[in-house]
Image (cartoon, rainbow, N blue to C red):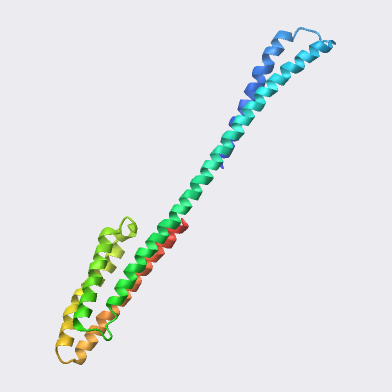
Length: 209
């Protein structure tokens, strides 16, 4: 708004300068003369006035063209920025969906062999570690202390899950082992859900700013 008022006053000032520059010389030259009754004199005055107005029209046209150009530039820049944000948010969402699917599948233990469960948990840990280390250009929020804590908690529980799985599938299942496994799985699921939601919230917040 401030720029609009500034541009408006600049335009008015330029018009006044042109008007004064055109009429002041005329006034000083003919100030002592009587008003002419000659048609040719008035014709000459009309030509002079047309020349002054023509200059004003040219200046107004240039000024309006300049303002329109600036508005178009701002509009185009706004559209480009909006498209960039949309494309970036889609790319972020795709990467987040891949991570979410990988983390969720790691804890789908039903009907899986021991080696496959261990492989899935290890693979999920590697995927999360790579995401945290390499995706900061997409998700700057990863550098937030809270996000790092969520990720560290998940990775820590992954490390604890593998020996528990090895014990349960290697020995007769005991109740304390089942409860221990279930507790850690529930904790990881909860931390994973919180982490994914925080990253989704970041995507939406960045898109709306």
